[in-house]
Amino acid sequence: MRMTKSVLWAVLLAVACAALAFAGGKTMSVAIRDAQLRETPSFLGKIIGPVPYAGQVEVVEEKGDWDKVAAPGGNTGWLHVSALSDKKIALASGGLDAAQGVSGKEMALAGKGFNAQVETDYRRGHAGNYEWIDKMGRVTYPPEALAAFLAQGEIHPREAGAQ
Image (cartoon, rainbow, N blue to C red; front, side):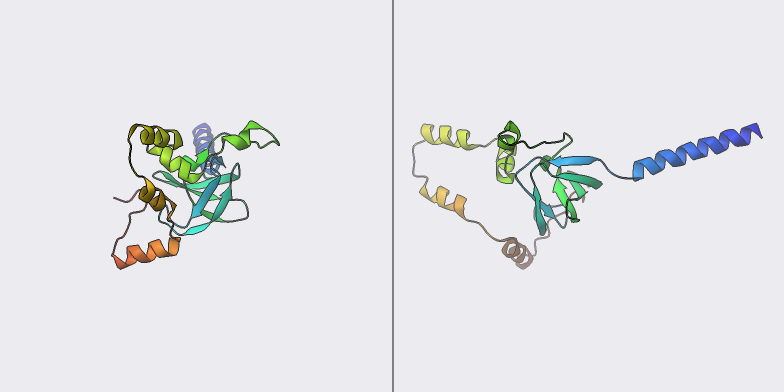
């Protein structure tokens, strides 16, 4: 009888721990200004909608460098982990928090070791005509056009975690 109670308590404890683990993911804050919730875990995934800076999201799944999150307003989709912080971001009028946010483009450039100061220093040290480079930097394409281009070229980008 004593052994049965011990086994029962061990099973109940294991079930309780498992329930806590699956009861909900961790809450994260959106750490960039223009985070885009995506349908698939890829920068080429269809954009579902924006998620506001400092917005709280609940991580429901992890796949490589991507987290599937439940966002405010009921949308569920994928965000790159570089757009998230485990620290709660509190916005205050006139506070420093709002000035510390970066855009997704700034985050991507910083990941490559590039920012406005690096560009300025480079141009200062390397004489040349950067007109066409500046023009190319202003070119944008809607996600639908990029998807059509990839489909026409039979390019199938891998999702996060795919081998």
